[in-house]
Amino acid sequence: MSLRVAIDARLETGKSGGVEAVVLGLARSLSRLHDGDEEYLFLTFDGADDWIRPHLSGPCRPLTVPWPRSQGGARAAARARIAARAPGLRAVWRSLPVFPWTRLPRPRPSEGTVERAGVDLVHFTIQSAFLTDIPSIYHPHDLQHLHLSQYFSAREIAKRELHYRTYCDRAKMVVVTSRWARQDLVRQYGLSEEKVVVVAWAPITDEYPSPEQAELDRINVEYELPDRFILYPAQTWPHKNHAGLLEALALLRARGHSIPLVSTGHLSPHATVLKGQARRLGLSDDIKWLGFVDPATLRALYAEATAVVVPTRFEAASGPVWEAFAAGVPVACSNVTSLPEQVGDAALIFDPDDIGAMADAILALWTDAGLRRRLAMRAKGRVAPFAWDRTARTFRAHYRRLAGQALTDEDRVLISLAQGI
Image (cartoon, rainbow, N blue to C red; front, side, top):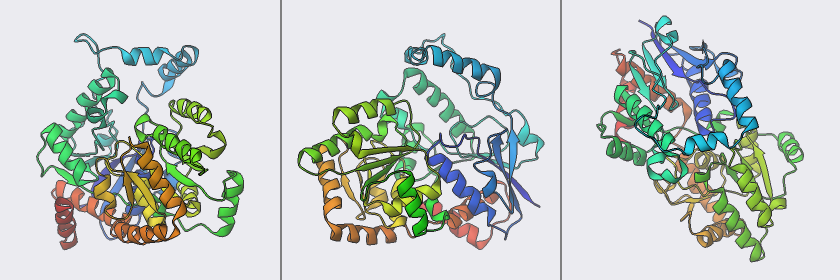
């Protein structure tokens, strides 16, 4: 009997960072699985599936769901008009304490699409799931709000706690991308270790061909890239610590080393603060803020970069680290959360709050070609076991297991590896 799985892809392109990348990787890799009897329905918002539709084929197809009232239609348009006229109003509302009589948005029930489609299992790849009696897999991704509460309003923390705990409790399986994240989720939410499974993502850039020289030349001209630069692909959220990176670059400039930075990723409201900081530090001419770029362009940027620097203060697992490793680009990154586990001896690590240590790591990569070569060789070996075909087959094995279907020998091996990773 065919197994029908709904996979949550209710995203607007360019706004979800690494989550969008991994959903694309899952779509492309599941589309290539022709040795099973499964059907994968990717849930997309009406009119917002251009980013994923070209990547769905074989057993995969889109399934349109309506926009929630809070995200589409007249109410959303009205809120957008209010935000434009009174930009500080939302910040004031979010800063209010959560009183007992304050109404938090409750987890939403399914509006019926997956039930009408005869779905056997729902795979929630994003935190904003919905309530359904259909068995589910849930990705909370991380519990950053409990570790870096200074970056969240009391209202946002309360909402995340309500939603994450609800969806974790209801899920048949909870998925994370590193052992560190698994241990954190078990400790913070009291989930059983058997319920929380590690399935590592692979680099999405590997799904795209190596750029030809003509493509590299085009990107260099289009973005006016310097001859050499370091790359940081991350949305401009405060915890990503672009601010610390700018301080490190200013320190290096004071020491006589001008090192250009190319930053990609959705420009959140915090980007205005960062651009002002860059001006005050005299770095404006050294920084390229490219915003969101597609994976093929990002792969070309990796090919051109001298090094990748990831100064984040929190990461359940870093997509940019894997992408840089796969591209053979040396990495310097923070020593926080899951990153030491992820990089091993294949990258330089530093305390993200130690600007001097960050600057030293950047300078070492910038000036020492031998070090860059050694790290790149280690990195290739470090990331080699992680491929999208394996990720897709691992999820398919769990889909079959949770739906009570017969497992192949390969399924059993992949499930065992995921449990013991």
